[in-house]
Image 1 (tube, rainbow, N blue to C red):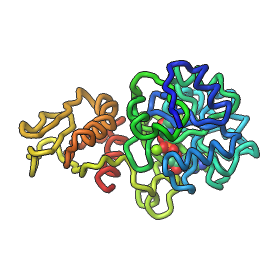
Image 2: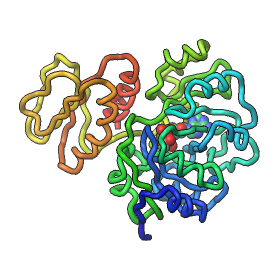
Image 3: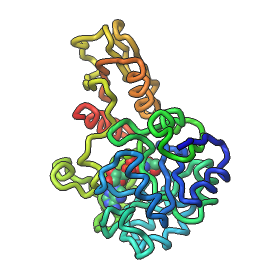
Image 4: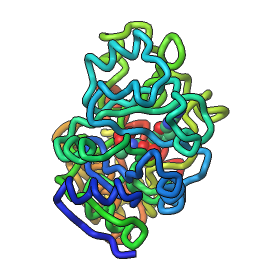
Length: 315
Ligand code: TXA
Ligand code: MG
């Protein structure tokens, strides 16, 4: 299949409305979108990514006013989070209504809902006839795509269209909060931290890490994620690298080791998040064998970076 690359949200939306797959930019990472009413498109999303069928998709809407189209109810906790954080890098899990296919939710009675703040995403979603089901636009298990070239690298020939935008400004996937239960539970860390969530909904709890591995509330958390081909090794800011040099790379916030083949010195945690996945991909292109990743401070988006680094190191 020929994959068209366009900068026009109108052209991209017209392909999606015909039942074709379209990758599109958001402020977190690029999404791989399909019309939620097309079973063919939904099935193709799983095939194109090599995604396990029990891992549900997030629905993307141009405006929070449309959540009633897909949710059974909007609890008061969700309303507070919507008022504070939509549009933005937050996904809410709500009880689904009958409009939502089990192919979207992998048979669950709940559905993930997100309204991206990105202007290109907004223009695109506005011209789509229905909510857009979209996982991250990468081959399953690889780092998420934060620029259109990464999308193209993974999905060229497998999807109809790539809507080209700038590099995703955040660089990590959205924070996920389950509001189908009370109190709401943080399922995946992202740019919006637990303390920011608690400022709006003080009852919000973090799910214990052990729960994530045994029987995760968020099915995607049990799969290996964010893994470059290179081996990922976590290191502390003050530690001396054990085997730097030949074919090793380093990313972090403090002084890089002099003998690494490739380094990324990030100006702060936001910059670290912004660069992480594209750095992983660059390392793969350059056949780096080991990537040393400095663990950032445990605060704000640093929590989310640590989470992704841990998963990458395990994968
Ligand atoms: O920032 C993002 O969230 C990006 C952009 C494209 O919006 N999307 C994204 O999608 O990261 P994906 O599919 O790569 O990750 C979605 C996660 C998966 O771990 C999935 O298991 C979980 O959300 N999820 C989806 N629906 C769910 C539900 N009903 N209950 C629990 N977890 C759900
Ligand atoms: Mg993903």
